[in-house]
Image (tube, rainbow, N blue to C red; front, side):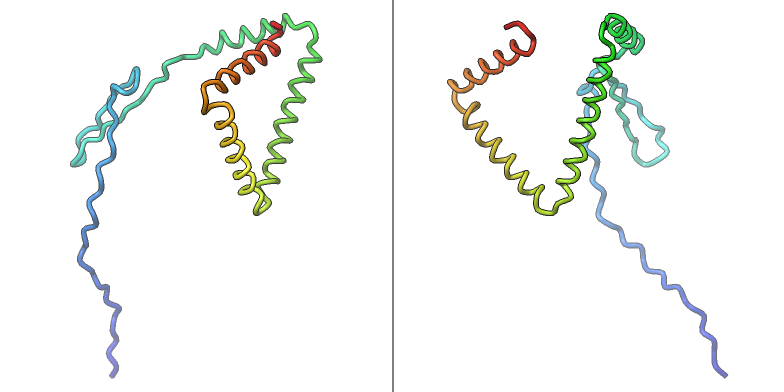
Length: 151
């Protein structure tokens, strides 16, 4: 007669893993308007949560009223709608082009190298020396005056 053997579960002794590191703590004083709340000590450790409140509060009613007033003051509303639609189309088109370029295997890395090279040249040309920084500030101020119509 053959003996039937039932499968036996082997229970391995529980191996203690490495101790978990304590999470880095943030001081509540680092946040302006922070609230510190402690959870009840149901566990061995007490957990502290920090809820940082935003410094600035946006009044949506005031923003909407300002936008509505500006819209009422606008004389050529069709031109504004055209510009907004054109801007949205350009943003969408540029996103599509960037996505297409990103899909080409080697091109994103080449574009990163081009960006790194241009950034290096810009720092050497305009940021590294005091005279060139003054020139950059003058060019920026001239462009700002030209755009704002003060020139």
